[in-house]
Length: 285
Image 1 (cartoon, rainbow, N blue to C red):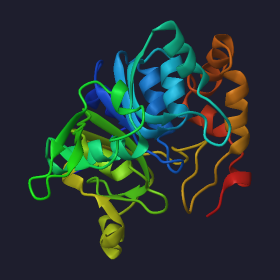
Image 2 (cartoon, rainbow, N blue to C red):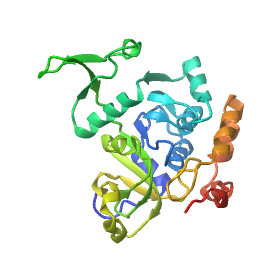
Image 3 (cartoon, rainbow, N blue to C red):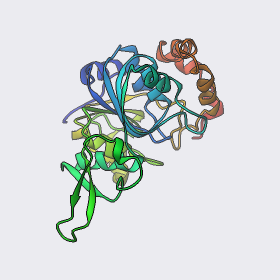
């Protein structure tokens, strides 16, 4: 992409996320894209297929809001707290379908798509009860050694939503700290939407080129959203709000409770959202 790719949350989602899309959710405990995910809910997106290796409560909120028809995942829950209650209810009542892999095989699926190959051979999913419940999982014989390996198929999402520390207006994205599968999932996707703590001049990006994880030509839209990953944390900006995760666990145990949570934390404008965050307590920079 040339020129500016700077957009608002609403315009980015309206332009680049469509009903029925497969959406990669970035963030590995660190820098979970809550602001972008909440915009999907406010926009009323439907029939999304969400995917990632280990999913945060953002995935549970999207399910609770009725945005999701299917989940492709390695793990989904409330990190350090417990299970994903809305996800569990949706599985039980049949309102969503699911495709369960392992965390590592999900990374391999995304890596294959990022590299433009149809599959990657691996030693995972050769034993245990996992292979029997994954439809279409094939095995291949290594042409060099004859060794039997699992053929992990590529997964190419339609769009990735991720959060990072900074970018310039063209969309050169810099991120540091725990990255997990965020970058590989983004690069595997056809389109990438990024929210960042700050948009900086290109000279700042050029001063530390080693921090650039996604180049501008791959980014469809970049949004400046301070605290855009709250209640997760962003290295160098703010820490994780553990109390929020515990409160979500309590609220999300019932459909009524999770609806109240979404009404309070999602169906509000950005200023109201920020006013509810104890930014002084959580800021680390």
